[in-house]
Image 1 (cartoon, rainbow, N blue to C red):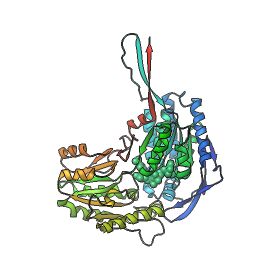
Image 2 (cartoon, protein in one colour):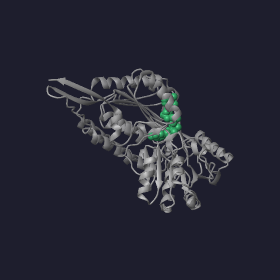
Image 3 (cartoon, rainbow, N blue to C red):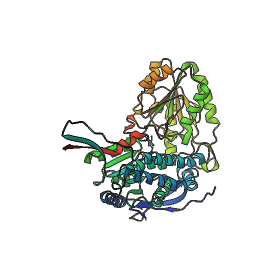
Image 4 (cartoon, protein in one colour):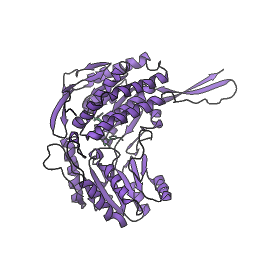
Length: 481
Ligand code: NAD
C-alpha cells in the first residue's frame, strides 16, 4: 500500500472547501513517528459561524424535510457506496493521523458503511402513534427534527463515531455542524468528500476542524444551534453541558469509562484471556468502553494473570502501517499522562506484572501493554480512566463483592462477566450498573445494540434503533373533527 497522503486538508462548509478564515492551520502529527505529516485548515469561531449559518439555511430551506424518508435513507446508502471508493486512503490516514493498526484502519470503512446503511434503512420506519381520544377527535404524534445538530467528536474513532451521528441526524431531517478532533481529523474530511459525491445538499453536513477550546466551545455556545451530540471526556462534557444549559439545548452525552469484567471461578480461562486482552489492547486501549479492570475470583487469579501477561507480551508494538498488533497512543501528552498514572499505581502499592512504561527504542508514542496486580478498588489506577493499554486486576471472594467492585466507580459505560453458569450470568447482568453488559466476550454487540453510559459516563444512546430517538422531538397533533 502507498504511504502517500495529502499534505493539506480543508474544512467543508456550505458545500464548499474552505481554508481557515483567519488563515491558520493545524499541524497533524503521525503518533507512530512523532513527525508532522500535513496540515488542516484551522477553524475558528468565525468558521463555526459560517458553518452554523449554512446548516441553518439548509434546514430552513426544508430540502431534507421535503424529501421522503425513503429518499433520505437512500442518500445514506449513496454515501456508504462513495465511502468505499476511499477505502485505501481512509486506512492510510487512520494509521498516519490516528495511530490505528492497518487492519483496524481498514475495518473503519465497512463499520461506517454499516452505520450508514442501518440508519438509512430506518429512515422510513420511525413511526409515530395514534392516540385514541374518542369520537370526534384525531390525535397523533410526529417525530420532528430539532434543526441544527452540533456534534463534537473525539480523536479515537472519528469516522464511525462521526458518521453514525451524522446519519441519525440526516435521516430524521436535521442538518449538522460537526467539529472534528484536532488530533485526527483526516478521515472525516474523506467522509465529507463522500457526502459531496453522494449529492448530499449543500449545508446539510458541515465539518470543521479546530481546537476544542476555541472552535468546539464556540459551536456548543452558538446561539443558532438546536441540539448537541458530544463524545469525549467527562471534564469537557461538563463544560459542554454548562453551555447547553444557557440555552436549554438537548444533549446526547457519550463520555468516558472505567469498565470492569468479572471472571467467575467456572469461566473458560482461554476465552477469558483472549477476550480480556482484546478488550484492553485493541487500539492501544484508546476506546471508551475498553475493559480496563478485570475483577477475578481469587481461586483462579494467578492463572488468569499468567495468561493475560502472555497475551500482552505476545503483541508486536509498532507502526500500524507496518502491520503491528499494537499502535501508538495519540500524542506525547497522552503517553506522558498514561505513564504518570502508572507511576501513581506503583507508588500506591500495586505490582506491575508487565509493562508500565513507554516502549524503548521507538520514535513514536508507544506504551507497552500493561497489567497491574495487587490492586485495591480504591486506588487511583482502579478509579481513573487511563485511555491506554493498561488493565488492573482486582481479586474477589464473593459474588456480592465482585458486583460492588464492578459498580464502584463514577463511570457506568460498559461491564462484563465470564461464567458458564447462565443463571449467575443473568443475575449479575441485572445488577451491573452500565449501559452495556457483555457475557463471555468483551464487546458482544455492535451497530444494532444501543450504546451509552449510566452515571458519569453520560446519557442518551448511540447505535441501535434507540439512537434515532435522540435526534427527534415528539410533537403531538390533536384535531377536533
Ligand atoms: P476530549 O474531551 O478532550 O475531547 C473531545 C472533543 O471535544 C474534541 O473534539 C475536542 O476538541 C473537543 N473539546 C475540547 N474542549 C472543548 C470545549 N471546551 N468545548 C467544546 N469542545 C471541546 O476527549 P478526548 O481526549 O479527545 O477523547 C477521549 C475521551 O473520550 C475519553 O474520556 C473517552 O472515554 C471518551 N470517549 C467516549 C466515547 C463514548 O461513546 N462514550 C467514545 C469515544 C471516546
